[in-house]
Amino acid sequence: MKTRLLRELPSVDELLRSAPLKEASALYSASAVTDSVRASIEAARSGIISGVVTAISFDGLVEASLAALRTTQCSRVRRVINASGTVLHTNIGRAVLSEEAVEAIRLASGNINLEFDLVSGERGERDSLVEDLIKRLTGAESATVVNNNAASVLLTLNSLAEGEEVVISRGELIEIGGSFRLPEIIKKSGCILKEVGTTNRTHPKDYSSAVTDKTALLFKAHTSNYTVVGFTAEVGLAELVDIGKKHGVPVVEDLGSGSLVDLTGYGLPKEPLVSGSIEAGADIVTFSGDKLLGGPQSGIIAGKKEFVDKIRKNPLKRALRADKLTLASLEATLRLYLNKDSLPARLPTLRHLTRPLAEIEAAANKALGLLKEKLGDGFEIRVEDGESVVGGGSLPGHNLATKVVSVTHKTENPGRIMKFFLDSTPSILGRINKERFLLDMRTVEDPLDIIPSGRF
Ligand SMILES: *Cc1c(COP(=O)(O)O)cnc(C)c1O
Image 1: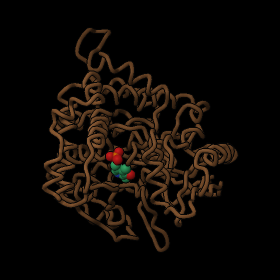
Image 2: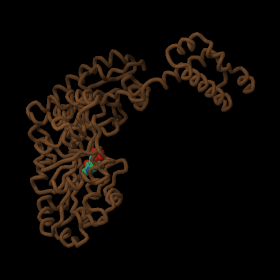
Image 3: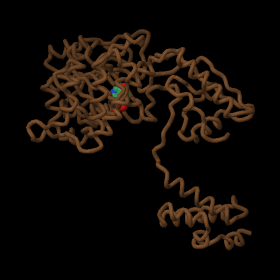
Image 4: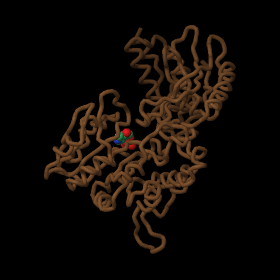
């Protein structure tokens, strides 16, 4: 039978002569149509050989070719509605940009004064687009920007301590996720890691006694994605700065997320302020542009001019420098911080973190009605209490009360429901908790956004 089926397979030309594919050739390029026809014939051929295809139809192959064509022609970048309950979800692009930042990206898509001083008519410095704002918001003497905070850490270490020792507490040798492990970054930056203290307790004397003439830096990392509780001791930044001063060794702090405003003013828990670290005397502070800051993916290096200058002169800076779209949208984001009163309304990250529960509940109730109508029989849809997390390694251990829409089905498992919402256009990302598919409304501004486009 396999031989018969293989013989029955139509040729590429026969399929191309069909009306739907002729029509498609007028819309797409002829070669794209031919490629998808070849792919669908090839798929059918291997299906026959493996035994999963037991009958072939001409129309079926035409349809498969059209489907393949649509897949290759449609953009790989797809919009995702974040109903995951994680406000800063790294896998879907962390911070949602403000309208101002989006406008800045549009502006920067053409030519801009990226490294061009419009006053003197001469070559300028790309950091100048954002440096004054960072200085103003953090109190730092100087600042520079790279592609992400992992790059900030790598570049800072390599610029200030290559070939020398970096002292860090064992309690701060963190892994951030992906493959960002501090001990490995220290090694890759050409520095020698000198661990001190223990996982739960590190004392000032641990640092003091570790400093030798080979020590180039005292390094402090904010343990952003976990908390150590119980019998613990940590040397605070101010104390570390004192130790550094006594031995003439600079102190670097990697804040990870860091914040430019006091979040407690908005009813959120305390996250270390970048300005606090600068004030406490850190020589360099590194932090992300797309975590709590709420801007584009970027890494900010702020601190004493002497050290930032050294970092800027490192040839690696050229390899890690931020592009014009990033710098433009970062500038627009930082500018929002100049008006703290309008910040929660203008900056989506802060708007989502501070969204009143009553508003989330209203959105959930609206979504409930719409989903009941759309999904129909077999589904049970309810509004329930839930908890959102900040994500991006920010505010560890702190969850925010929220409202979720739970979607369950009499016979279908939650994984299948999750897949159905992901297949929607745009994709809708929820999460599964205790065998239930949940849509967290905290980050969904329009309830219509979580109504799937297709039929279950
Ligand atoms: C998130 C984080 C990083 C990495 O920052 P990215 O912007 O993701 O590259 C580094 N250090 C700490 C402490 C972090 O929390």
